[in-house]
Image (tube, rainbow, N blue to C red; front, side, top):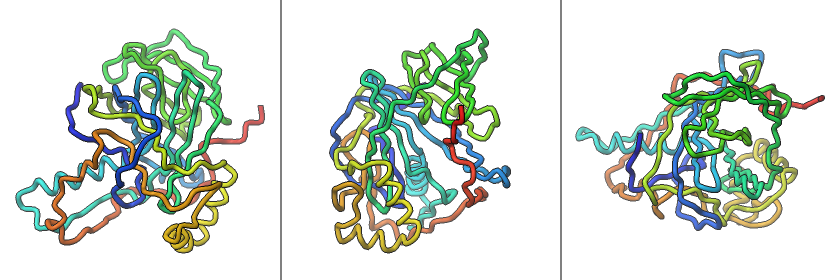
Amino acid sequence: MRIKMKCFCFLLFTGCLATTTKAQQSEPALARVLYEFTHINDTLQPDKPHKEEMVLYIGQHASLYGSNTGEQINQQIQKQLEDPSFDGNLTITGSGRTTQESYYAKPGTQAFKQLSRVAGETYLVDKDYPAIDWHVSDETKEIGGYTAQRATGRFKGREYTAWFTTEVPFQAGPWKLQGLPGLILEAEDSREEVVFRYAGFETFEESEAAVLLPDNAIPTTQKALDKLVEAYKRNPQAAHNARSQGTATAGGGSGRPVVRVGAGGGNAMASIDPSRIKSVNVKKDNTQISPVDNNPLELEDNR
């Protein structure tokens, strides 16, 4: 399946459309994989998991994984604007919870970076490249029309089963699941608390999209970022006020533009005539997600 699009925005979404930024590392995106991500974040309420559509963009040398919420919202907006009966009242529907982290992986140099959105800023943390001792079996099954092979491995306190295919010329995976000789289409842990379910694969024409690492992200450490996140949770308004005054930092930097990574050099919504929009109504969908987080993705590994 191929897609044609003049411009694509992969938004690190915080409730607003992003502005244009420069990128320090960029290469054409050759394909993308969509995943239906499910995480039972509260073991006492397993019927109210965090569910979200995630996307993995793949270039020749690097990949970028994160939430697809921004693109879904763009699609909602475009659909309403193209409706002849549109009366100027825009409605945006979502679950109310969006993953604020994205992950950039470059296997050739063992580079792995985490991008995190906090209080309107984007912070960049260098991480160790995920090391997983995968055990590949001869078992196969079909996923999305591709023959996928089974592999198992332990990572951050969880036993994962991954299904990867060698029928496409990519070696990548969702989140931190890296290191298999093919493209991971699905994965889940042994307790079925963390699941990445295949939701689609698309290839791009040349120059239709790009894998970008923005150069206006603020470099920091995980320790400093954790402190900032905790401060934001305690007093979100103070964090936003500090940002507006240019003092919201973690390890250096100051107020920066909202980060956008995507293709085409412009905003996918740039063609919108603001005068057509009278109001914006944000609605929560019927998704029920527990606000309690007692089951993190990464557990303590006692092995």
